[in-house]
Each structure stands twice: as structure tokens, then as C-alpha cells.
Length: 380
Image 1 (spheres, helix red, strand yellow):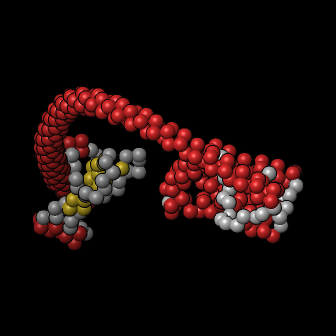
Image 2 (spheres, rainbow, N blue to C red):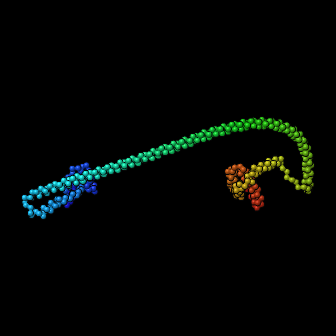
Image 3 (cartoon, one colour):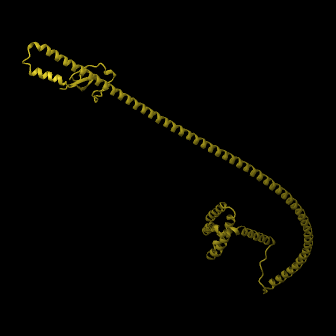
């Protein structure tokens, strides 16, 4: 016959998966034979321990007591009870021994688990410390590498700054040298120009003096020659005048005689005589016309001024053609033409004057031939 003994202990950590587990706090906990865990605030876990079976002698005693109980006297009941109590005491002792051994085993297992947990925790801590050390080493190496990179970058930047500084100094020195060379070259050119100008002025002064001298000599020679020519011309003019006066006197007398006698003398058609002042004015006007034509020659031949010349010519033609034989119209057209001339600059003004003169002459040839009265308007 075997019995199952159950011992219970409180479990604060809530781990109810270990039967027979115990710790140092489980020593002295109540033992329940065939009992169950308590239902209090603290959780109770139980462990079952199988009690040792009864011995063969005890079985024989129980069988003999059961079979031969009828032949035994009632006086032997006390002996049987004492034997049963002893047996139960022995069983209880074995049970307590088994419970103690179980509790000791549970305590050993709990201690082993704690040791394993502590070892695991130590290994975990060592692993974490190792990882932390590795991370620190990596971070330190990264920091060292970064510092080295920063030092290298700083050195490169310093070298570049030094190179830029040297380049700037070299450029500044080159610019100063170039400016100095240019200034010296300019000063040399200025000095040469001053010397050349002085030499040119001196040569020009000498040439001017020589030219003035030659001009004075030529003027004196021309003056003498002119005086001689004038004397000769005066003599010849006086002789011609006397001869012409004698001839005119003779012709006058002959004409008077012919007029008196009523005869018409045939011969050449007499030419229109012009006064000396008129001839001089004609010469001056011809020179003025030549100068005006020379002034507008370049403007008149330039291709880019063709459109402008055409506009001026058309405006002048319109004004000339609108001249009529009334004083009011003549005054109006005169003002229009003067306004047009005032607005122009040289050489356009000279070109306009020449165009007006040319159109006036052409209008005289065309319009006067058609209508004689038109001549008075143009003349006005």
C-alpha cells in the first residue's frame, strides 16, 4: 500500500509551473497530507510525495489480525491498537523523512535554478558589458577616424587657403608690376610725344618762317608784277578807251547822219551790252553757286540720304506748284518755304535752296509758256 503526501508552499512570483520547488523561505512551511493549496491572497503550490509501502511483516500482521480476529480475545485489542499506532508512527516518520528529503531536493533545485539564473544574468551582463565595450571601442575608433578626417580636411583647407593667398599675392604683384610697366611705358610715350611735338612745332615754325619769307617775296614780286601789269593795263585801257570813244563818236555821228537821212544800215545784230557791276555780280553769283554745289555734292550722292532727299524734293515741288497769281497765295507759299528752310540743317538747307532754284526755273519754262501771268507770281 502506498500513499501520496502533498506539501504546499507560498509562491510570491506567481510561477506555478514547478511542483516540488522550494527555496530558503519554504523551510518550516506547513505540510498537508493529501491537502490542496490555500485560496488566500498568496498563491500556494503543492508537491506530492509518494510514501514508502508497508513492509511484508506489517501485511502479515494485518492479515492475521483480520483472519484470526474471531479467535483472539477481546483482551488483545489494546495490543492491536498499540501495534497500529506504532505502525502509523513508523509510517509518519518515513513520511516526514521523505517530505524533508523532498523539500531538500526542491531547495537544491531552487538553489540550482537561482545559481543558473545568476550565472545567466552574469553572462548576460558580461555580454552587455562586452557589447558596450565593443560599441565604445567602435565609437572611439569612429571618433578617432572622424578627428583624423577633420584634421585632414583642416589641413587641406589650410593648404588651399595658403595657395589662394599665394595666388592672390602673386596676382597682386603681377598687377602692380603690370601697372608699373604700363605707367613707365605711358611716361615714355608721353615723353616721346612731347619731344616729337616740340620737334614738330620747331619744324613747323621754321617752315612757317620760310613760307612767310617766300610768301613775302612772292607777294612783293607779284605786287611789282601787278603794278607793272596795272600800269600797262591802264595804258592799254586808256588807249582802248580813247580808240573806242573815237569809234563811238564816229558811229554816233554816222547814226545821226543815217537817222537824218532815213537810211537803215544792214550788218550784224548788235549784242546786249552789260554794265561792269552786273558782270561782277554775275561772277560772284556763279562762284556762290559752285560753292553750294560743292557743299551738297557728298550729301547728294550718298545712297543712305536718298529717301530724305526725295521727301525734301517732293515738299518743295508741292509748294512751288501751289504758287498762284495772288499776293495772298504768294505770301503764304513764301512763308511755308521759309518755315521749311528754317527747320533744316546743313547740308539739307543748301540742297533745298538749290532744289527751289531749279524748280523755279523749270516752272518758269513750263508754266509761263502756258500762262504768261504766271511769270509775275514767280518773280514776286
